[in-house]
Amino acid sequence: MARSKPIDLATRSFETQSDAKTFFKAILNRYRPGERLTEEDGLDLVALLERHTEYVDKVGCGVGHFEVMRTEHGTQCFRIVRTDGSGTDFSYIHCISQRAPSRKQEVSQGFRRAVKLDLYRARDRFFAAHKGADGLVACAVTSERIGRDQGHMDHCPPMTFEVIVTTFLCGRGLSLDDVPLTTGRDEQVSPEVTDEALRDNFRSYHARVARLDFVISSVNLAQAGRHRLRPGRIDLVSE
Image (cartoon, rainbow, N blue to C red; front, side):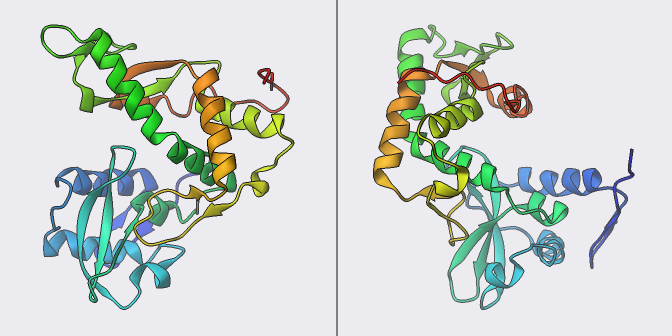
């Protein structure tokens, strides 16, 4: 197995990418959304930002300071506030790995954005039907009692979100490149599918085939890489 390459920044060095991710994740988790980072933490982010593959566009007229923002998926990320008051988000993981999201990841993010409000409504209906006297529900994986803001609606196998996107496109004879997206815009954490009819069709398909459970956020994110769709293993759901 190849050894992870060291990460050398202007402010500090890390033996592995994993060490760097742990360090910057700890910084991210020290702040609440909207909070401004200290100058000390900001210096580390300036050094990290130099590794971003879209560095020039992200920095723009210059970095004024950094803050933490909440994404549309309920997680947190770093935000640049430029000297002219404009801003944009950026991924510390992108900076460390220096790998831009794949087309498949961008399309998946775009379709997930299309059903974001549907998933919120599904969560609210689930809580209305299942919450106990304590106002909590049981995590479908751990059985831990959790609140509405502590988890996500998780797609149950075999119709994981990846499978839903893949079967939707295959059923229409579409490739990943056929999905029109907005990418790289300021303040846009995830791409948006610009074809309204395609978005609406996906929402309808998703509503019909998705089976959802409420799962605590830490478990939901940890198992996101599981149940990957294998090439040649696609069973289309009838329209």
